[in-house]
Length: 220
Length: 74
Image (cartoon, rainbow over all chains, first blue to last red; front, side, top):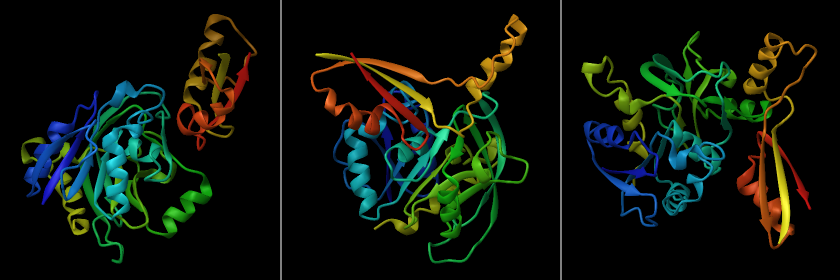
């Protein structure tokens, strides 16, 4: 399994993502934002950071990069795509995932380890609910998930709420404690917390690896 | 070239913590009776074809899911 990790000007978590993909059992390489060709990778990570300085809105400019055009085609063909933090914002701006990420309710940049509930994300799209608790750090200033109520209802009905903050853990005012969502097919997943920072027992948790491995089933 | 100004603001009903923070700071400075503060942003530009500004706003300058925009041309 070969992972491609996008790199924009302003990305800062792409190296940790590469490391995480390797620990999850694959190979990984960087894909520069100007590359229109993903080079035949089996899965794509859109990493965290501040692509293009977060100018205008987080993720708004990155969405128009050559590499993101290629990622949109790749996702449409069923290829697995994982967006983390800024990567989640980029996928929402690109319309590959529903909703938007707004400034944290308390206006503070939050940075801490927290518990997530993986709802359907770790199972197959057809599978039943298998709620598992994961310990993963979050660090962001604009992570408040928002979508209109009718969209939220639909996401819940279709099992597209992939990750929720555990009770009492919602750090940013996200609607219905949503930490991550997936598209209807399940091959595109985005979340605000950082699974690539939870891959080594030295830092307290290796739960992040499960998030990476959950996408393997979509690799062609 | 037509000069234009695009005003972008959070949609009604969406919590705007920036506006709230500004509103809460005002009484400490002696400004009483100021409510409903909302913070948006303004983009100034010059365009050959002002007719394309609507699409430009929809695709890039605003996120229609969370923001309203208003185009003023001069």
